[in-house]
Each structure stands twice: as C-alpha cells, then as structure tokens.
Length: 173
Ligand code: ATP
Ligand code: MG
Image 1: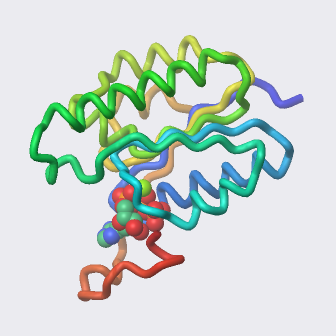
Image 2 (image 1 turned 60 degrees about the vertical axis):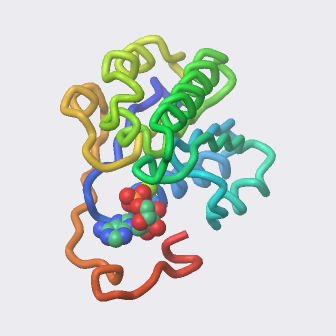
C-alpha cells in the first residue's frame, strides 16, 4: 500500500533543495510512477537534471519563467509567468494522473507575492490521495511548513561560490 500522498518541503539557504527533489523524482520514476515537475522563476537555462529527466517517459517537465525576477525590466512579466506556472500546477494536481508533483522554487514565487499561501494550502487540501508534492525554495512560509508532512532545511555550512569559485556544470547546474 502506498498510502496517502505526502507533502514535502525542501527549504533553507544551503545547497541541495532542487537536487534532493530531483533525487526523489528519479526514485519515483524508477518505480514506474508518473511524475510532473513545474519549475518557477527559472528560464531556459539548461540544467543537467532537466536533461536527465527528459530521458524518462514518465517524467513531465514544465519550465515557465524568465530567470531572476530582479533582472526583469517589466515586473509584470515575472508575475504573469509565475501565475502561468501556478495554473499548470493546479491543472496537473487536479488531473489525478500523477503520483508526484514537484513545484521547484514555488517558495520563492510565494515570497515574491506571485502565489498566495492560501492558494498553496488549497492545493494541498484538494489534491488527489495518490499525489505527493514537493515544494522547494528558500524562505518557506510558516503556514506551508505547518501543513507539510516532511520538511527539510538545508543549512549552508560553506559554499564554494563565496570563495569566488564559479558555478560548475554537473554540480551547480
Ligand atoms: P541545487 O540546485 O544545487 O540543489 P538549491 O536548489 O538548494 O541548489 P537554489 O537556491 O535553487 O539552490 O540556488 C540555485 C543555484 O545556486 C544552484 O546552482 C545552486 O547549486 C546554487 N546554490 C545553492 N545554495 C547556494 C549557496 N548557499 N550559495 C551559493 N550558491 C548556492
Ligand atoms: Mg533550487
């Protein structure tokens, strides 16, 4: 018995939130489960985990975003893209076709005010029993943490970035 789907949150300032979510994506996919990933904020930036996921017929990835919001010329653009990504999450959750839905960087979209905490809590309440969800991103809201089953806070002990080391392919992206 799989039991009722779980709600997981990966938050904190340390590295590993998205990659841990993808570890679970591949774990579920390996069991033949149907997996959907929606990435907020991120643009066309080609990450290794996306390329790997594309090799699985049972992983569906949607990326809607224009990159870092503070670099946008028109603030309405990141907002409407985040709304589009959120609508996609609601549609995927309601379809009852998936076992796992990852909403990557949703915490950031909530922190920016693009998606409300109430909307996220409503998705938790309305989601089909088979569906587990993972939310990633820094600064998860207290209400979302309270509603989740499993919450992991990545704590940054050190990161090469702060020693002037550039992002490394295969490690950071
Ligand atoms: P990853 O994708 O490596 O699991 P993450 O999801 O925890 O990281 P994000 O906050 O989404 O981290 O950051 C996006 C990018 O910044 C990634 O390339 C990530 O490796 C890198 N990064 C993560 N944590 C830190 C940190 N504390 N300092 C500098 N860069 C970081
Ligand atoms: Mg991330």
